[in-house]
Image: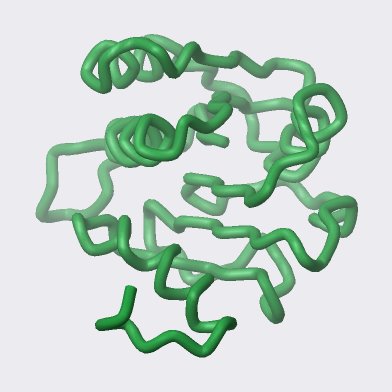
Length: 163
């Protein structure tokens, strides 16, 4: 799930010219292509756009970037709408700047399903209850592709160098 709300147009940091939305597009497209995942952009729960994963990563990034919804942010309502229509899923990944409307949270996702939320802006305010199988991550770089696998294999007791 990619937050496409108006606030995602803000820069990632004072040292970057990339917006949170651009960074989220690059990383979500890469993750989705690598894992053949369902991918959708949202602002409000009634305003969700799904994407075809079969295209090239660069084309997918361009298609994601062209969907600037600009409204508010209803992360969990939008995720629940996707869960109800396209799910269930084996994991949920959300790229957002955490400027979220209050919601009922992610209780509709079974506890055994991992939920990863990437904070693209670094506001340090979680929009989910952290704990078992619930992760808040910040910092988007090439190492994030290994992080999900490391977290999931940690539960099975595998050492990182065995993966």
